[in-house]
Length: 590
Image (cartoon, rainbow, N blue to C red; front, side, top):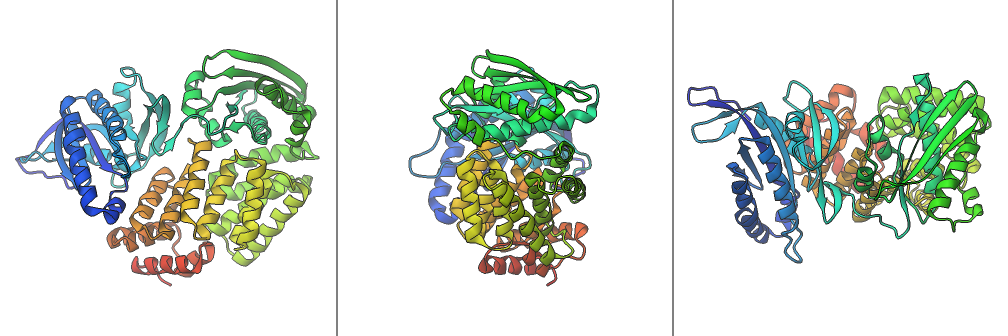
């Protein structure tokens, strides 16, 4: 927005609320008159009375959006929460319900003679609105500091984000809204567990060793416990990438239970001194905060896998004693023959999941070293294959044909050694997807999910496979399942991109651009997102945004061409032709 500077302009500090209706263009394309009538009713019956009740000033409405000024951030938050609850309750039968996304900022604004408002205080509120998920509320740190101790609401810290045309990074928080007794995080609704059986979250164990370098070792123990628990079909186990968002935070177990929709929480600590190790673990009923059991396990580092298995067996025995010992045995992964190789793989894991070029290089180096020590370590082989696959998918490869061959070779070698390991089968499914062997990829991913229905990453890769095989609605279901299993996952942006890809496949270009832009907000460093965002904008008729998107892509990929992008993506030819058309319109050379 421009910033007028003539003598009619006044300034004041205000809380600014920006909101819009999610998917409005898609709703209009299906039922223009009905959607307009419903929106008018919503404004008259819900939005305007709600704003007045909290003494807000409706500055303006623009299409499906509106801008409101409040004297107090507390009033803005209360209004936003009430609006979201009222809109959620206003569904009218068969029509698809409206969903708002809301951003709130506290800052200096400029007021025109006609009452319109401008300035960074407004711009930041608009950026926060764009970042919010459907049904969600995002707010700046200024607002959070004003309201944090005055409202009985749960907040999630989303970290600092750099917004376009805003010179400084903005720390963002979202409100975890309560709906029907369950906490929700926008589109990622955290309802009661999807299974009849027990549900559990394993929080990061505290590293009590004097050496902070042993942090990775404590993380590795938790990683393996989660993997073992995930193998039981009657359990719902929250994915590691979500539970690790609690790392380093003082947590309230009942709140964690509500946020993640689980009945049990496992927490603990690890102390390592030389070859000696002590692991302490406690299982807690999330509803009451009561400890079901607490135990410590002593041994030497060489016994670490046995200690992990003892903890897993204790958890299972406390929650569901009917599980047979044979099932516990089947849940154990093939262990590495060399503990130094295990150390290297645990050090590599954060870099594997960073999806950054430099991190990919470091992960590859660590995994190659691990494989020199233990050439038959299936997890190391599998992760090395996935790192190579990342180089293909994100246009980091200097030799795509060779990397495709090696990705498939390493993934297949890992699967021979770990043929019943769901993670390894998922990597093979991803490799087969990259090489366009879709039928075999589906078989691998289906097998992985039959072994571990709690694998958020397997559901994610299955979603991408369905994008590539022109099954967009199934793809969206699988991405949403992934988000349910790992709602606060730093990798969640990849699901947002996948949902955007599904909308592109279905020729819903505005929705595609919306979801891909959301993914870019979640992961601003992933400039490769512009490869699919730019053509989405172009085919949605927003050529200026499309050209700007290509410009951002070229900053990190100055030599990239349409042919390079088509080589990296695995969509069907018809869909790739549409991507190519959109990229041409956006100004990218062939």
